Image 1: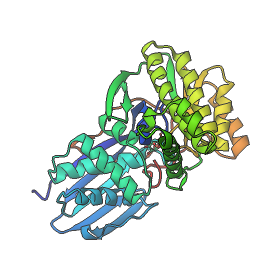
Image 2 (image 1 turned 180 degrees about the vertical axis):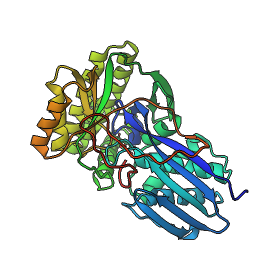
Image 3 (image 1 turned 45 degrees about the horizontal axis):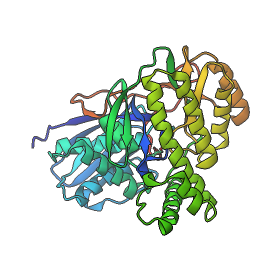
Length: 395
Ligand code: GLA
C-alpha cells in the first residue's frame, strides 16, 4: 500500500419526513439525506497508531490495541467503528483521520451516524475490506451501541448510505428493504426550526423507550406467544393485554402502530402531491410523539404551537430522537416569510435565538477522492449564527 494513499469520504446528515422512533422496533420510516455532511480524510501509517484530528474539537493519538469508549467526544465514534471492524474479524493498521463538516451540533440531523458511516467507508477503501453498504450500516450502528451507549436503530445509517437526491427512502426495518419515493415540492419547503436545546439520546430516555416497547410485546406474548415482533401487534392486542397492566407501555406501543400507518399515508399523500394531507400527518405524528411517546420538551412544544397557528405552515413535528433538536416544518413558499416574528416570539418564550435551516435532498455517502476545505456551518438566512459543525454527542 502506498504511503501517499489518501481517501476522502463525504457522508450526509438526514432528516426524517415521518416514521419516528419506529426503526428499532422493525417499523416504517421515510428518511431523506440532506445537503449537510461530514467529511473524513484518512491516510495509512506504517505503525499501529491512530492519529485522529478534528479542527473543531481537537485530536487524540492512541494505539489500535487501546480502543475504549469515550462518550461525549467526537472520536468515540471513530474508535467505535474500528472496534466494530476488529470485532468482525477485519484487519486494520494505523491511520490518520481528519474529520470536519457542516452538520450543526445537536439538531437531530444525525452527524454522529454520518461520522460513523464516513469512517467505515473510508477505512473500507483504505484497507480494502470489501464491505457492502449494508455491512457498513451495521458496523456504524454497532459503533453507536458500544462506544456511545445509544441503542439506536438503522434509520440514520441507511439514510446516510443509501439515499438518492430527490428521493426519500421508504424504509421497512422489519426486512431492511426500501423503495425510493420521489419528493417533489415545487411550491413548498422543508424547514427545520432549531430549538437550540441539545438533546442527549444517550441520557437514558431513548434506551428506556425501547425497553417500554419491549414490555408491551412481552405482555402480549403471555397470551399470544406466536406474536414475535412489534409489527405483528394490533390495537386489540394492546387493549386486551397491555392497557390494564402497564399504561406507559400501552401508550408507547400504540404510538408505534399509529406512526407506521402514518408512514403509509404520507407516502400516498406525496405520490398524490397532496401537501395538505402530508402536513396533517406531520401534525398527527407530532402529537403522538409528544403525548403518547413523550419525547418532546417545552421548547419544541412552543415551536410546534407557533407553526400550528401560522397560515403558511401546513404541518410540523419534532424530528429525530426528541428532547430538543429541531422541528421539521412543511411550509408554503417563500419559507422565510414570517420567520422574524417566529424568532421574536421564540426568544421571548425561551431566551434562545431561533436558528433555521432550509434543506435540500442529497445523495448517500461516497468516496469523493478529492480534498475539500473543511467548511464551517452557516444556518440559512437572517436568524443564523450556528456554531461550526461536527456533532460529538448526539445524532
Ligand atoms: C435517532 C436514532 C435513530 C432513530 C431516531 C428516532 O436518530 O439514531 O435510530 O431511532 O432517533 O426515529
